[in-house]
Length: 132
Image 1 (tube, helix red, strand yellow):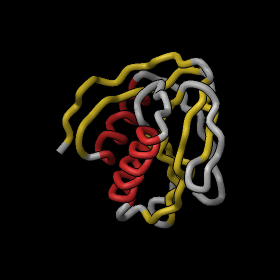
Image 2: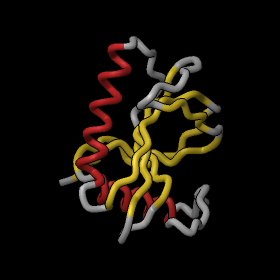
Image 3: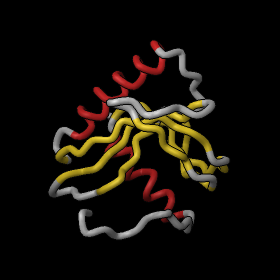
Image 4: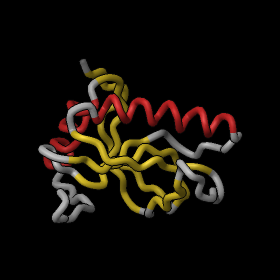
């Protein structure tokens, strides 16, 4: 079930630092994997007293619905963070971001956001890749 907390909107964001965990996972079970990663990242950020600078996010790096998905779970942070064995710094590019706040089924939320982007005639920063 999906509960929309805040309807889709576009938000300008300046370039900023983030901390991510990147994994490859089959599509089946991907959201269970991302839930585990969010918990792991949240605990690390809390233990290290890292200042968050925005909401946690799920980034699709490679989309192959029949194969392996490349995903990153991350959080914007204040200041520069160095890499660790498990977590990597990431630079979030400046630009417009399509946003949706929800609770529940991530696949349904993703589809809802993609449909909204199409209805608004917005262009996405995406490219084709042999991996997906």
